[in-house]
Image (cartoon, rainbow, N blue to C red; front, side):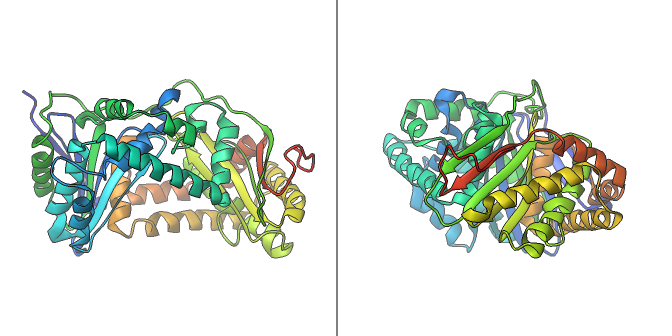
Amino acid sequence: MIRATTSTLLSPEAGGPVKRTVLPSGLRVLSQSVPGFRSVTFGVWVGVGSRDEPEQLAGATHFLEHLLFKGTERRDALEISAAIDAVGGEMNAFTGKEYTCYYARVLDSDLPLAVDVICDMITSATLTPADVESERDVIDEEIAMHADETSDHIHDLFAEQLWGKSPLGRSITGTPESVAGLSRQQVVGWYRRRYKPSNIVVSVAGNVDHADVVRLVRKAFERHWVTEEATPSPVRRGGKPVPTYSGVQVHHRDVEQAHLVLGMPGLVRDDERRYVAGVLHGIVGGGMSSRLFQEVREKRGLAYSVFTFGSAYADAGMVGVYAGCLPKKAPEVLDVIRAELESIAGGNITPDELLRGKGQMRGSVVMGLEDTGAKMTRIAKAELVYGELPTVDDILHRIDSVTLDDVARLAADLYGGTPALTVMGPFDENTTAFTL
């Protein structure tokens, strides 16, 4: 018989305590105690995302996330939301390409309620035919609303252009056609195959005691799931590289502002150069003193919004630049962005820019962990996604160790190739105004 095992991942002196318990079912429970805080954020992370879906199930993971709020054997949809509202708490969920998260933020005294409600949703969703059909319409509305948010939608179009028909290139929500084609049987089957204790991480941060958390979680799960002994699912690692594509795609929209995304393949998640990439991000387009903000907005007044972005997965990554501007200025904005990226790829980075980039990343790391939600997310991702939990001091040390040569070499690697360009605005889709 396998017993529950508990270990300390970070001591109080190292920024903890962060403790980890593995239950016989393979369910992992992590907690970070933050004395002095009166709030607690409780999250359940499932190791399944949109990239895990075969083409015929595109959108199923996000569909399922919606359905778990519709009702369980013990509560209907109103009772689920009212339970958390009644104590002044917040509850939500989100689906990513590699995981799904359900979470609630409540007063520390209301943690038992949050555990009970969310674990009830995870273990005992009814997924009735009526709920499936009504939520299908809600998701169609969500897809339409997202398409209307052109500054967001262009990032989905760019991912599709860069990664093509691969699961990483597909929208997390699916399309109206794929959602319409999902049957209740398919969604229920996806739920039963993917929502297993060994594929789940429970993460809690705030004014909590780890033993109390484990007791609450164990009671909530074992009440509904009688499972066999299992080992936790391993961290997702990279396999065969995801093919990438370059070129130009123009999407016609009758809007007042043009949107441009110029990007290229980036680093995979566990690449040792990820701290160098964070510093480079700050130098190129991560703040008001960044190269692109100064050149595009401050000096030339070409665009209101311009910034860099990046995403990293187990076997693929992307980096890019977004700009929103008047349509008549779009070709010039593109020329300036390309010129700056070529300059930076050629090693034109100053020591002052390096210091600012490092400072920006240090501040982002520390200030980004100032609430229980961020702490909960950090320890969950360390377990489910990264497989390690470095101390904040260790992260700051890795940032401080980045050199000008490191940044120059990575800039040459990332920006030296042929990019992909996605443009959205009142343009003819066959226009030759945008070239690479």
